[in-house]
Amino acid sequence: MNASQPSRSDAVEVRDLVVRYGAATALDSVSLRVAPGEMVALVGPNGAGKSTLVNTLTGILTPASGSVVVRARIAQVPEGRQMFGDLTVDDNLRLGAWQLRGRGKSRRKQRDTSWVYELLPDLVRVRDRKAGGLSGGQQQMVAVGRALMSRPEVLVIDELSLGLAPLIVADLAEHLTELNREQGTAVVLIEQNARLALDLCSRAYVLEAGRIAAEGDSADLAASPDIARAYLGEAQGLPSPPDAQGAPGPDAPGPDDRATADPVPTPGTVKTGRGNQDTAVQAARATTREAK
Ligand SMILES: Nc1ncnc2c1ncn2[C@@H]1O[C@H](COP(=O)(O)OP(=O)(O)OP(=O)(O)O)[C@@H](O)[C@H]1O
Ligand SMILES: [Mg+2]
Image (cartoon, rainbow, N blue to C red; front, side, top):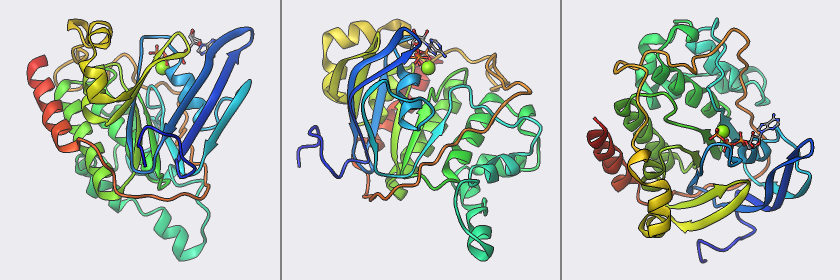
């Protein structure tokens, strides 16, 4: 099957999507697909509609027209993480499983967080600390772990690197590729650092003013002079951290934070991911070195 062609086996299929906020059109005729086990990047400038698109995928927003078909369990790491700051890391993780149905032993298994700590071992030593007191990088890991607790087949991450130190971003990127490679979880990655996103993901969409301006294999997009000029220039270096230790950034959570890992249980299939993950991790590290 041609990877760029829509198929009924796609985990996510969006056609001619229009989303409005009142009279303002945020997305106009957007089509996108995600195959099982695929890593797909969504890049574009501020206000392009990236969050609107993923919030529509996870059912937070309702389309004005067009169709969104999600054939897999999907969970979202929301922009700004949105922790329950007064709850412990472990409690935040367990909240991620709230929508899974199960009783007795199976419920206990669903709420078992140990496998998330295996995947994100940096969280072990802070498991009993309140999430609100953690560094930005630790909070992002909690947000990823919380979304994973709903056992998603598609993980949507809205701004992986926002406010984080380059080394922490590289670490998170490595965890994502590992998750994709070992568990076959598809990833939709929104990322302001377009180079990192194109390195990590095999396919990408460029969103501009609510429309898809370009799409295709990440390597082809990265090689396009127009894309390189618009998105991969000097200004696209990794974002500056609030401080090198990864202290809470300006987007640290407030008291009204909500957990929004939002699984949508529908049947789906998962197969092993493809793509340039090994290279991507090296590239993420290289980008980190460049950005230092
Ligand atoms: N709740 C809202 N009410 C009205 N307009 C909104 C709302 N949320 C977003 N918008 C507008 O919709 C457009 C798309 O916003 P969106 O947040 O989806 O962009 P984005 O690509 O995620 O931007 P960023 O990179 O800054 O996160 C923008 O013009 C924005 O101002
Ligand atoms: Mg956004």
